[in-house]
Structure formats: C-alpha cells, structure tokens
Amino acid sequence: MTIPQLKHGLKKAIAQGLTLAIFNSCDGLSLAVNLADLHIPQMIVMREPVPDQVAQAFLKNFLAAFASGKPFYYSVREAREKLQGLEDECPCATWLAVICQNPAEIPVTCQDFRKSIGYS
Image (tube, rainbow, N blue to C red; front, side, top):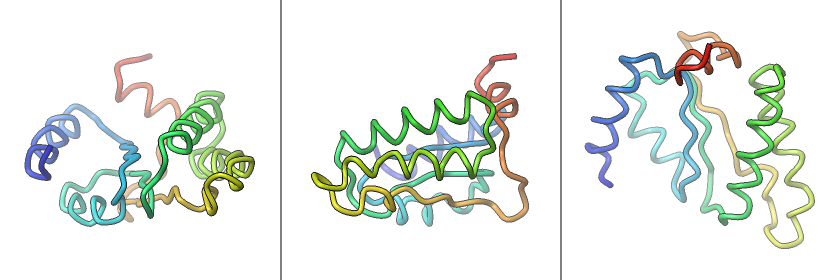
C-alpha cells in the first residue's frame, strides 16, 4: 500500500471520527511524518523495525490496559513495560513504541476510542 492510498483511507476514517491510529510498521516515524498533514489526534508508531511477536504483544497489552479504563499515556507505558520479558530475544523492545500526538488535541480516552469504532 502506498502513502497516498493510506492517506485516502485515513481521511475517510478521520471524517468518521478516528481519534487513534496504531501502526506496527517497520518505519513508523517516517510514516508519522508523512501522515502529519492529516492531523490524526493520536498515533502510536514504532521507531524501528519491529518483530511480529513484539508488535502483537504491545498491541494486546495496550488494548487490555486501555479497554480497562486506564488513561492513554499510562496504557502505552504499561504495554511497553510488559515487553521487558522479550528483551532477550529483541533488545530494546520496551522503547520501540512511541506516541505521536497532534498538539491541538487532548489525549484520547477509551470512551472516545469506542465511539470512533462504533461501540457505545
């Protein structure tokens, strides 16, 4: 998928209330720069290439924390900390995920996120 194709899809999602995008891609920081003009309220990207195991563990732990009602930043921190057990296999796993936030937006809440994906 190209950046223009991704932007096209994201524009539609933003118009429908997208507040958080998570990209478990190899070049997340570059992706965040290329998507900056879309003004997505919050993005979580990976700073470096990320093994599938790390990406999946991060996402699972983040969603569990966030869905339980913990604040956005705390949920990201907790998910990163839980990657500590993977550091032997993937050094620096705990620092791969980074938040890119539109400074004009307040941090997303679980309730906002649920609304953006159609849950009440």
